[in-house]
Amino acid sequence: MKRYAFVGVGMIAGFAAAAMLFPAAHSASDNSAYKQLDLFGDAFERVQANYVRPVSGTELVNAAIEGMVSSLDPHSSYMDAKQYADLKIQTTGEFAGIGIEVTMEDGLVKVISPIDDTPAAKAGIKPGDYIAAIDSTPVQGLSLGDAVDLMRGKPGTKIKLTVLRKGEKKPFQLTLTRAIVHVATVKFHRDGNIGYIRLTSFNEDAAPGIERAVKSLQQQIGPNLKGYVLDLRNNPGGLLEQAVDVSDDFLQSGTIVSTKGRHASDDATYSAHSGDITNGKPVIVLVNGGTASAAEIVAGALQDDKRAKIVGMQSFGKGSVQTIIPLSQGGGALRLTTARYYTPSGRSIQAVGITPDVAVAQGDESSVKLAAQSEADLPDHLASEGPAKKTTQIIKPAPGKKYDDFQLSYALDMLNGKSTVAFVKSAAVAD
Image (cartoon, rainbow, N blue to C red; front, side):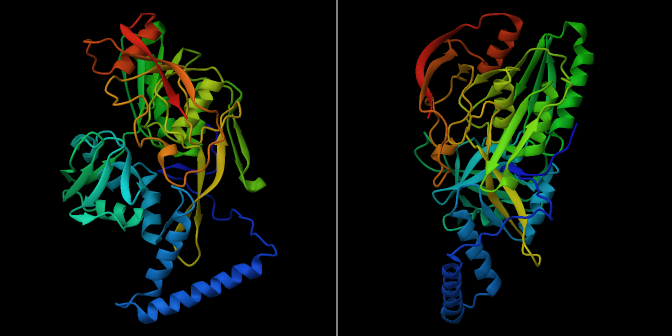
């Protein structure tokens, strides 16, 4: 598959080429900017001279950069040299920790999604949970990077998290054992004559893993293969180039995604190349409120190009692109929002999400739109360019009927030409 520039999408970001040029802004306001820098220098000197304890220049500058960047939107941040190095390791699909994708909200660490088969997932951490304390250290007042650093540690060591969860009256504590997190990017199995493929994140092995899975399922099932279920539920995203390559695996032609930013250098259009690895077999893509970023690019591309049916619940709605910009003198890097992305039909899903073709609830949702589980719920998020609220029919399990995974059962029945026993409720699913 063709390779593209590394541009970060979602909590697992990619990397821009070091030689990439970012235009400097020169205007009549430059003099004012220099005055503001003089103000910063004055404050810097006074803090260093008068604060109750000695503080290093590095500490103050790092905090100032972090505050400046993190105030822009929920996905822009500053990484010091250590965090930058850790990020490079993370994109390869292996790192030490507990295995959660997180953001910061209201001073607390908010879980976007636990990664499958990690200490966090095994302990029962759920999307939308808030982490209020780490080993009795309150999260309030910490930067996201500091909180992540506290959660990392040597494999085999214990970590105690204080968790807030919607529906629980009191905070509760979970004790986890840190481990080397091997992100099994792709899992798959045969379900009768249907191939089930679960994609957990978009690291460097996403597209190669999908290609291996499809090849293996074709060999297992043979000519009676009816189609595929691509499960992107609770997939928090990752590398833009991998989202493009995964989409390209299922498409013969057409636009996959386009990006538009402040500068022409941020604008790009990515197109599919001939060669559908499934040979045109039907595809159903499963999504939910934890489907974010790069995962939404794939769902949006296959939906707009009419290559797949999207089944499940409204996705997260992260429609922005983050570029990793290395800083000089070993000063780490900025993860900076530089563009929005658009589906092939020109839709921005920012703060809106992907609306499924068939809205199917799992059955255990406390409401149709889970509280505090979308981009629109994050403070300082980029404004939506998408449509207003939509109303659709939501399919739920029939009363008294038990399913291990109702959404998956419904998708499998669709591919098998069967009807799932369910009932339908009208409800709003998108902002």
